[in-house]
Image (tube, rainbow, N blue to C red; front, side):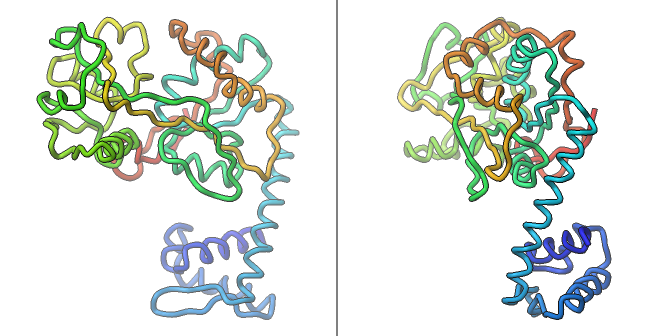
Length: 337
């Protein structure tokens, strides 16, 4: 029945049997047959069918509401059983790539030193995938950057503001400066993230608000990763505008200089996502409390970055080994390592 309910929910949400069949890796006739089986079992027609797809009938809307409740109950039951089987305390969270790479190692290292019996399960994905997993209760905490999702079941809180800064090589004429103006950017070779990435979207929106079109800038290269951009800038092939977090490490300080955009500072929120239908564990509340303690958080992040070392064995990362979609922050990731 659970599989039938999941199939019904998919069709109700996509409003398209063909698309649902593709997502579920089933044939279209099989999906239609199982929907018919449900309708016969409950003595009601759940969908109105047309050339444009399917829509829920009044009976279907009632059934959909109950199906979601049943699936939520089953999901909660599975979580409780899994927690009982593991018999260990843990923090289940997801984070976008920038946060996972440049913030989480310091935070998890700090938490481990304070609470060595806590295990961490971390999924790395884009904002869309993290949001979906929080809503489906696959992870209990999501740490995202950029555009904030809207859903009645989501609780969203800001834990840090990330500044986008101009980054130049140590050999660049601006290397001794602390800041530049927006107008000065138009004269430089600019290396940026690809269109569609969260960093690019934040930059485009900020510039647009200030009357600047990115087409007016001298963009000479668009790359799909921050590390690739840093290598190009280090080689003296241009300057870039990226997150200040990505150039805070000691090695970066030897290669780059960061400058503020004095007349147009650009910030983007880093946010905590939780599902208001579930209660976080005591251990997960420790992480949330830390993130909300602004003074403590800045103190942790301001220290020289150190690798997790022996602490790494306590952290299980879901890594981006298979890319789905197009480039950078827009990508979804699958796989475990």
